[in-house]
Amino acid sequence: MNIFEEYLNKITALILKKQKFLKLDHVNNFKGIAVETPPPEFNFDLSCNAGLVLGKINKIDPKELANTIKDLILKDLEDFEKIEIAGPGFLNLKLKNKFLISNINKILENKESYGKKISNNTYNIEFVSANPTGPMHVGHCRGAIYGDVLANLLKFNGNKVTKEYYINDYGNQIKNFVKSVFLRIREIQYNEKFILTEDLYPGEYIIEIGKKIIDSNKSEKFINFDESFNLLKKESLKHSMDLIKSDLKKLGIEHDNFFSETKLVENKLVDEAVNYLKKKNYVQEGYLQPPKGEADKTWKKTKRLIFKSTLFGDDTDRAMQKNDGSWTYFAMMWGITWIK
Image (cartoon, rainbow, N blue to C red; front, side, top):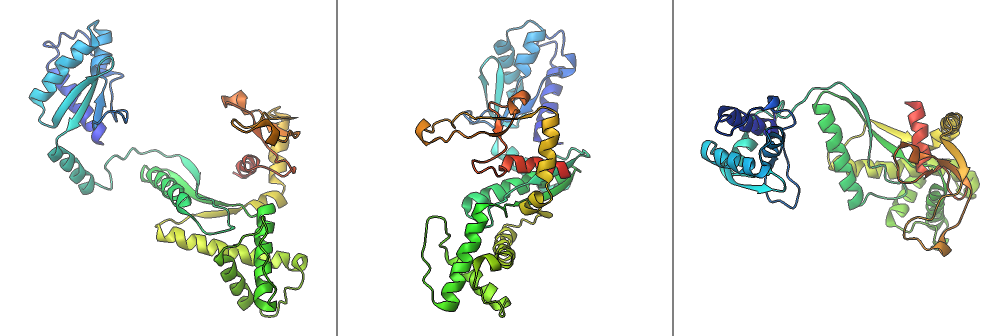
């Protein structure tokens, strides 16, 4: 049981006890009556629609009935400091401090079961998934905590949950990241000046990654970028992800699975998923409208594969390809779904 169920039981029990006084011919097993969180503009702890629901089925003015229920609650239940009627007959209820404290103590005393609703579903929660081209920032931390709490709540209720981190280790941003590490290594080993251009990563962490790669690959000369690329990509991503995992651990967050975008592309899993969607006529070649707020002169009209997401209630269709023809994140997620 949780706080909403507890006060739903208390309020409906009181209404049942005072049914004749309230002139209620029908309560319909209190079907449709709920206690929940009120909208944020109301400074109350709980909200109940009993007056609205019971007023309708008994042909009584909902506001009038809600006011009578309000008086009964304040008289018979000592839990509430204040009750107000809102809208067409909602009861907004504010708990007394001692009952807020009492409920908190109940949660602490029954933390293994309080609010638990057993289910047996399987979920894959993909969260954080910050690009491995640099350290995490505060925005990533916010998303990390949100995703971890969601996964833990699902686990608490008996579900099987996999916490997944999607590593964006494919595409131009990775090439630029690896090139930045290569140039820093050249700077350290051969005193070549690191010339910062728009596509490179300037952070101090790039220097630290470069130093670690040099220490663990003493026989490598790093003369040619293309020849060193595969080694540098593997090593750079390892050290970058170690930094991200270290920050996540400080937040108390550990993922069950780290999935590589490169594997999706190399194993042609996205291609398989897209071909399946084509057969279902959910994908077509076409043009998207410019994003809202973006001036037409900055929008490049490019023919690409588009998923017909409006068929499923979306407000717009979604691009499966970027301007350069590579897969979008949206398409990559279809590739992961194809694996699952």
